[in-house]
Image (cartoon, rainbow, N blue to C red; front, side, top):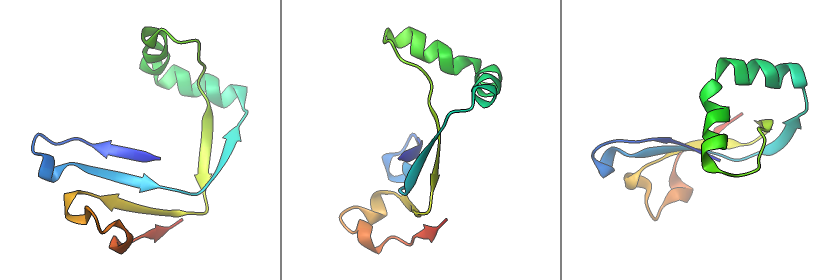
Length: 83
């Protein structure tokens, strides 16, 4: 999974890349709270015109690292943080 931080200058574009074990959380109360706090999320799904639902999951036991153009073609050297 990657979380993106956009920048107007491509040199400053970064992603937080996370890998690990995924656990799907099937908690209807949590889902209800999540969608209540983020009403735009359901709107995004509806606007996409797809028949989809929201899945809440936890990524655990893996590494995370920041990628930007300075790590291009040498991603294996980027420092990792274990979680």
